[in-house]
Image 1 (cartoon, rainbow, N blue to C red):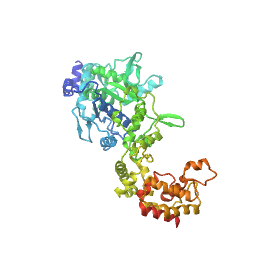
Image 2: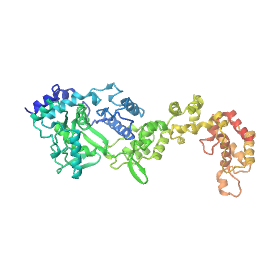
Image 3: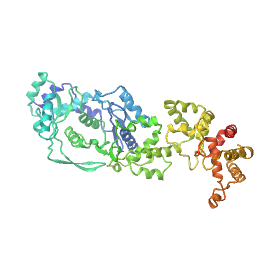
Image 4: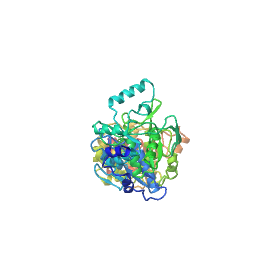
Length: 549
């Protein structure tokens, strides 16, 4: 009996690997086109690091006219959650990222290189496992859980590496006849890869991001097919990346230590190795120390957090691009109005040391992104958010035309307003523009420099009687505020008050602040003239009379 006979005994119906090589031929793409994948497990929410991987992969494949695919690695079926695939697809789609190939939902897929769910590819893995068995590079292992536990304890007691390798690989050198007899006897087994590595020897690998790295050779005889007939991650990813013709594996550097194993697997299978690109994970600073952002500890680790907060998808993607390539920020400053797609991403410029997640920076990016939105875009996005998370805001936005006038204040000019960083701030930013909300508010107004009640009443009464005309253009309106200031003994120009501060109790800016607070309840707002134009004569009059009464 030989390796061929043993392989036929274990996988009698497996097709030759030539069948799959022909079925999934090299892709007909232009030179330099990148083919890459997002390959999550359907075991929970999408992590911010996974979204960053998608942002980068999608950008690179667009940039090189390549292919970005979604492969679901569901071989660990005990941890799988209900509708896990749909959650992944929806979470990434919510950020405007679409896949060229892969799973569309729990059961449907698109593309010619599927199935894109590993649990549906058992016949493929069996074919390549059979090939390794025929080559003498895989073998059945009959070690029981008790045997493996005893081995691990002995290794720990001897203070040596744990694992199934070398003299510890009990079933590695079992004869073909002995293995075949155990299988015929019905003894349970798994399939292991037979490593030819020596841990004492070194290999050098070039990582696109990290550069040259020296590793000890792999000598572990890892499991490649489990007792349930499904492959382990390491084996499945090698077969899948080869047959899906992946050119670049872009992933977090927690996988760097697997490189020697993955290189040996590719070599044993006769595959061309893809280019590995290991980037540093996103970090969180806590008590002066850095750690990986955590699903368990940090709400911002889940991409759903950004939807709940109302941070626009575009802003999150821009921020992650900023983490991905350090030169993106300077490019954005030089090209403030260009679409992100025009930025030339360079894999080799990705960080080898993790970037600290900075919420302040993200919100600053978000303010800039929202400031470039049209009033219609702001209305539609804030309404969509409100429908999911804030019924009170949804009610405020029912009058579309009036809401558009509010969002149009200080928008579309050379220096648009930047007072909104996320949709959850919209209600607070605009609520004073609605009479029902404004008049029902209970809090006392806090005035600035001019805070004497009688003086405030005098300013408002004089303005209403002599200087208020809703039909005024902006310059006329401001000239009237100056005239009002002068009449009541205030400097009509700010510089006059600065030059002779002892002469004036205040200036035109202080007088306009009295008007601003009386009309909005706030000392800081967008342009007051534009606010008054949107409020209209009746509302402005009512608000001033409320103070006077």
